[in-house]
Length: 151
Image (cartoon, rainbow, N blue to C red; front, top):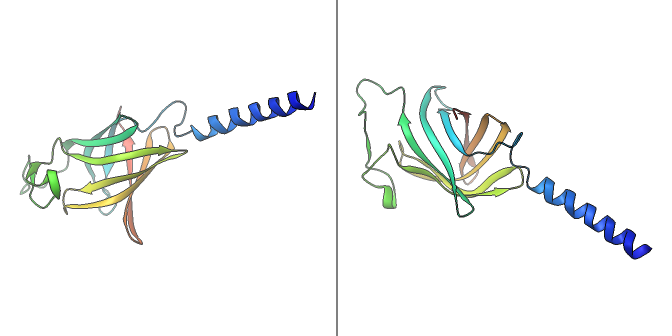
């Protein structure tokens, strides 16, 4: 009888731990989809970024640039971006790479600021089904943007 109770208790505990560790979404929502990015320094909407999953990792690319100044290029090229993104068009550029789902957040990946050409470590988490917090950091310095779900 003790063996059955221990086995049942272990099964119930594992079931709840598995379900809790899978919670990275609200009401079945995840970070997948199209997001409106808001610049944390200016408060302006800057772009639309599509996030997708591929082989267990999450990626995001810029689909549209918004609120461009009159003197800014409407289809800019990133001359200061590192590696394979140097001299590539910003629209269509992958700015989120290698994010991994970890319990209630996404981490272990990077985010690129194409305006500065700098890549940062990244963590993201949903505060509700339509709000994604995106934090990029380098050492002890970080910035956090709020992104809003479009679809």
